[in-house]
Length: 136
Image (cartoon, rainbow, N blue to C red; front, side, top):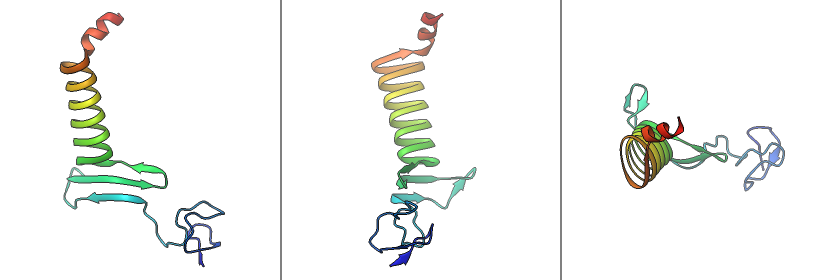
């Protein structure tokens, strides 16, 4: 038995959560979450050059934030993710300037379903300029 790092009650070393406060793996002195995360030591404008995150803290995903962001959720200049925001994005769902995606909003894109400002290619892609004309 060990003390819970958050509330101090005695808990088993095999406990997944604290019965009093709900802390995950309460017997561990420090718990940083499930999954994988990597941040390069090299930074540009305070952002890591590469941030890869397939990690959860508690039940919340940790987004990848970097010049090159790779993960389930990502924000970066170059973004490779399931859901993301970036300048150049390869994602399932994205908002970016240039995108290759399943669903997206971008200046230019290749998408299955998307809104674009300049150029768009794919199954159902609609010019935002034309869409705004119809709304007026």
